[in-house]
Length: 336
Image 1 (cartoon, rainbow, N blue to C red):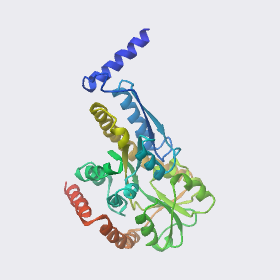
Image 2 (cartoon, rainbow, N blue to C red):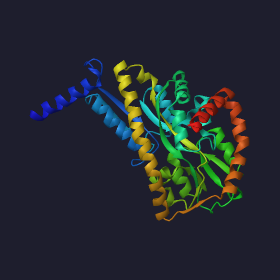
Image 3 (cartoon, rainbow, N blue to C red):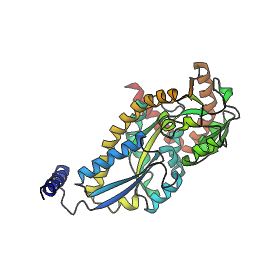
Image 4 (cartoon, helix red, strand yellow):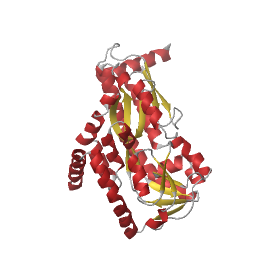
């Protein structure tokens, strides 16, 4: 009885702290929250923090159930389920949402951000909010952006010491057009594939390589099926934390604010964890036997030159207005 009384006091205190919410403002709810990343990855750590914050702020009324590791399917099925209301929340690479709103392809532009500080300034500012607002007509509500990080190249055939070494490699890419084209620009062979299938394809030698941040490579044990890691930092991936509009429209104003605030609060923690984990993951991959190298500066310049025609092509399809807005936000971030 005493324990029950303590739990009741804690629940009431949580609701009061959130803004004197009445019992009608927050209902008993269960949220399914999916991602492709496995347990232990910084994205899942952020999801765990989000669930903890939501439970505390709702007095235990709103429960967030996590589905990591692609157990509810790949990104495309997750988006469809989100739109249909059978999954309430998903965290995914923002660029994948180009399948819904073409402007999101800008987040897959190679060498767009020089560092995470620039990325934070852009996605947390007016540009990032405007991009998420475009999703509403597609049945998706964008809550905030978390971080996956800078992508790097792995393969099982040879070390990549110069741009020409990429030629002929069969490389898995996130299934959208810009990724196909920048891999083609390196005279390599792009293979679109849902992430849960990648390990098996690498193991079976159906793929030569793939590209992802260090934390993804380590968390998914890709070092077991890949020998070489080349530090290229060629694309930075913000992660969109999105929620089903069908579900969102059933929420009270208090519940919407609670979930939105919790996503932002968890995101600050998640980014910190992700950035600390990146160096730790690289060290672990080296210790596990991966051969790690960096392209010399002249080769990185050649790599950027190879990407310029691809960027120019997609600047047209994304829309010059969007590109100009992005460039403006980057200029502001770089001037501070």
